[in-house]
Length: 498
Image 1 (cartoon, one colour):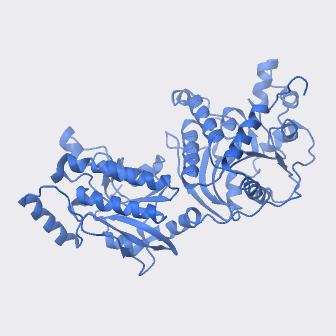
Image 2 (cartoon, rainbow, N blue to C red; image 1 turned 135 degrees about the vertical axis):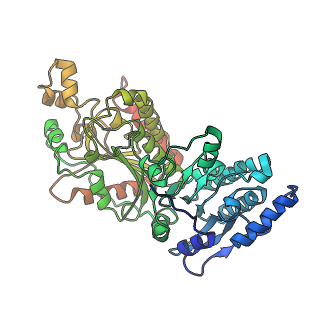
Image 3 (cartoon, helix red, strand yellow; image 1 turned 90 degrees about the vertical axis):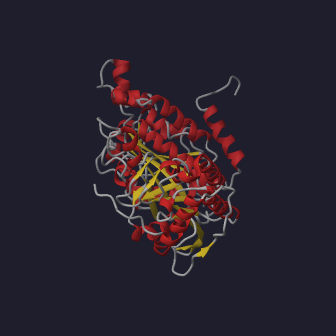
């Protein structure tokens, strides 16, 4: 894979990303107490003449698709975009100002890392930059990173890897240890094709590989979702909490497995806007779970869903999928967005690799993250809901089921095999275990059932999710979380005398 040769100048990046004529510099001269010797002074003078800027980073503000943003851009032509004391201070001042003014922050690093001429003092500057970025994110403000060619060393290991959402320049060299340093230490070349943007995307480490000329459009879509999520409408009243169902569990199970049944991606297609966030399995195969920024109708949320069309007996939901789900839950918390989970899975992957990858632990952690999340949460039982992979996404404030969605500890065939030593009694077992939507409603597990009456199910789902999130918006966070905990504490319990 061919690498790009030259990193675009900082000014080129600013011109490509920001609305014309909107950039305003925040740069001021920063004095450090570093004892600059003659050789280093000459290098700084030469760097200024070569790059046309006074430091290795340019900071300021502008607008992207009309959204006011703060932006920090590395200038690689200035001593390889390296971070010295003055550079770090300029970065931190810009990040802190963005936080004070409540602005989304766009970072476009291109750097060899620490400025070697300033030694260890420069090296530890990465810490204060990382702290400033963490404070920005803790304020609920978006942080979007565009990794340019090349981004390596301490920059990649600190602020360049903290993005809520991260894109990369095509062909960019991106890696912790630069290839020149690796060769000097190990006397051999670093394996080719590893530290390349496209390979990072293939391994789920960046959310997209985007040419610079397309970046403004992509950032505009992201900002429309995370910078101004939109007003949540008040919930409509008079909607039925449930519908009359056949009560035939096996019919629901059979219909949930039909090839033409809507999937989470069909739900996405019915939404107003969707920005997928990337994730893959360790072996590079397509994930059985997707995470995306989604605008339903007017409400923006993080959607985490099983993709029925990317699951198979050989690969269903594995540890990497659940780690992606947990990333989505954290992202929703940081951006102060609600979470929608979409359950549609025949069960978790059963393999040696999944066991060694900590499948059970990841199910436990994901389940706990959902139930403890401060974000408003709605779970949708879209189709199949088998085993721990389903349970991991279930414990929400509100649980909605499609009429032919179902939930069970095992697929009915597996439960039948355990109880009766045969799979032939699966329909009987499914009925006995009360797995269908009506029984789940009657048992207090499901709050609402969406009728499958021949109308567009995906459109019904989106409208229902919008209503449910609007309903949750009327509760305080503490009250909502307490109600969530209480509901699961009470399922299946009937105290004496009650």
